[in-house]
Length: 410
Image 1 (tube, rainbow, N blue to C red):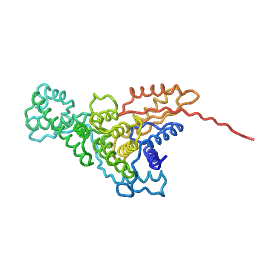
Image 2: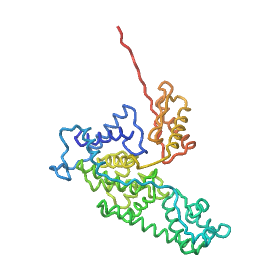
Image 3: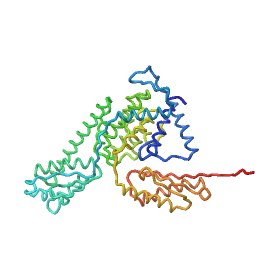
Image 4: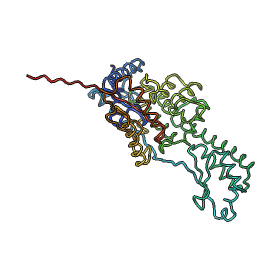
């Protein structure tokens, strides 16, 4: 194992010790001891397959790694440098938007105009915009509710324009919604262009820029996805600089790693694979496409850049304040998950980890054979899907350990 290979492996191990996995909450669970050994060997071989750039003499771009530190210490040092260099704003978002109404507009009966005769205008707006209008929740506002932040933003802009104009009827609603969508699309493009410009990333296809920009309207546990992508790009670049990898490729892959979250429902694969396919379609290099596909390990990470993007994604999503959620909801979900697992015959114990994103199940090796484990995992996953409400996905891992002890005595 080469020195840089060892540092990367230890970097991922150190992330695992901090966050419970070497990646974001969607990470797969640790395997059994033998499987861990095999996985570490596979990672080592995979990283060694990729030719590393020649290390130049110590310069700001290629700092010399201290020889007196072992690989594990060097991994900690590199992580601490990358984190310390990254300053991030703490921003959270909700699933609603508000359009404030002035006292003069309320006196003119603007809410009645929004509702229309027999609710015609409100229903038409909701149908065309794909949102819910809550007119009675607040006396001086109209609340727009939608889990799709892009639709919510289009609806907010359109409703503000309608209220300002005062002419509210079905044909006008459709016209203003079309104008608002064009306006929000342009805003998304500008945001994508600014993100690429700030990171000194050039020659991004306009289709990639547009989808990247739409991430500013999307959130995961309150974390803005465009800000998360930018932060991941910076951290991946810092890590690449410390290890002497190509900083530009690391930043590019980090910025585009969650591209799939901005795609619509016509792309059926998971967001990592869908984003990789979309990036490939619009001319991204094989190195960037591979890093995007591998950042949730749906595809085995091969190159060093793959592991750096995976690590940067984990750091951005797991830092304090990045994401939020209801503590009680998480506890209730974890309890329900463990209860479902314990109701399955042959289960010794079960534990929900990573805020309820992963369920580890330990079975009785005398009752459950290796060939029974895939069916058990599938059965429990199906019950979780039908009985538990959760965002994203839950990884179900079934572990079977056989211990044999003999005592030698005189």
